[in-house]
Image 1 (cartoon, rainbow, N blue to C red):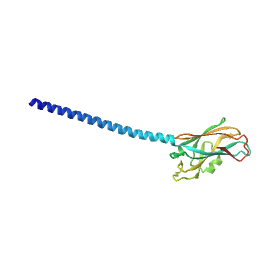
Image 2 (tube, one colour):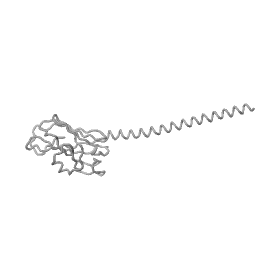
Image 3 (tube, rainbow, N blue to C red):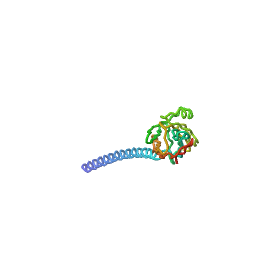
Amino acid sequence: MKNKGMMGIGTLIIFIAVILVAAVAAAVLVSTSSSLQQKALQTGGQAEEAVATGAEAVSVMATDASSTHAVDYFEVLLRLQAGSESMNLNNTVILVDTSDISQSLSYNSTLDTNDAWNAGDTARYLVHYVKEGPDYEANYLSRGDVIKVKFKTDGSIGENKRVRIKIVPRVGTASVIEFTTPDVMTDKRVSLWP
């Protein structure tokens, strides 16, 4: 009888040890799966923001072709793409490319729009809020905002020239506007796109 009792206690100890090992393994699995779920949600949110965020061009105008038949001051009307998060303009670069010009412009929020426009700064672009949306925040392109981006190119762009303007946010998709200047430009303001 004594041997049977010893075997029963030994079996009980082994059974409890197996249950403890299983409980520890289950706790490790639950912790790991919770950590992986949080990382997956975070990565998914970042991927969604990167795909959805971006600007949409409404129009491109330029001046002054009345005397030189070439333009160098540009105005691009922008708004957010549908479903886009707000874009920080301080982290947004505009690239301008033609056969003669390759230029990178960064945002300048410190100068008055008209003063900088007249000064002809070719390293920065300026923004004028045409319409402020319900989520308006200075130096951001937010839902409902319509902005006019102004910049000067390094050189004049003449008639019948291919132009590519690329708006590149730090997070999100780049917006590309491609057009060819008209064959004849004689007006002070020239509509270039759409």
